[in-house]
Amino acid sequence: MMGPKQEAQPALFYEFSLKDHVPQDHLLRSIDRFVDLSRIRAHLVDFYSHTGRPSVDPELLIRMLLVGY
Image (tube, rainbow, N blue to C red; front, side):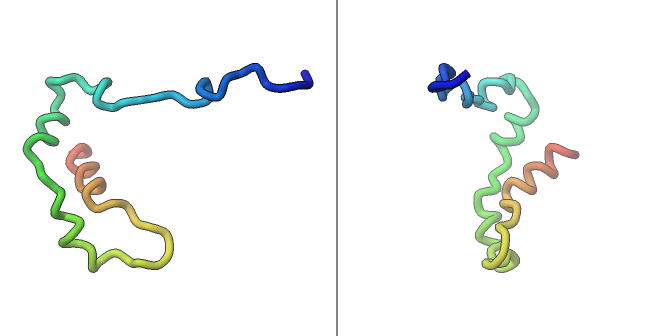
């Protein structure tokens, strides 16, 4: 069909909030409440290269390891 698309752009995107889908009593919420990893980045900054592709955020990597265990 020629002409402008009838589909609205918001239909291409959706909002997803992980907080809305993880139950309040889930184990991950307890881990997040008690484990503060905000200072990890400062301790590991010397080990990450400033050239090339950016690496995985160290805080995210440690959180993924905790979830894996």
